[in-house]
Image 1 (cartoon, rainbow, N blue to C red):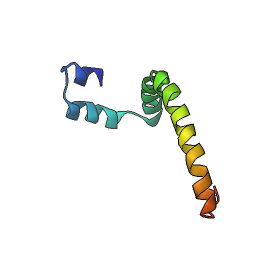
Image 2: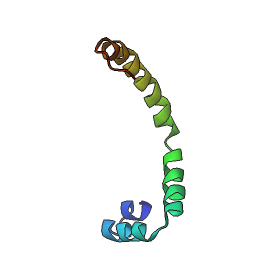
Image 3: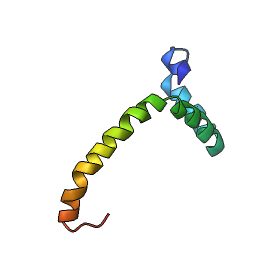
Length: 66
């Protein structure tokens, strides 16, 4: 991804490389990438909790079990 962003390779070449990787490599590569967005998770989780708090009563009133 960094090479595509830097213009050193194209998206098709990067996609081809990804198709050659094993699932373990995928998990490691993207897990490391996703671990770098902790600030996003910290901001997003409270927002999702607020949404859940607002939606739980109407869902319950409709008789939908969660």
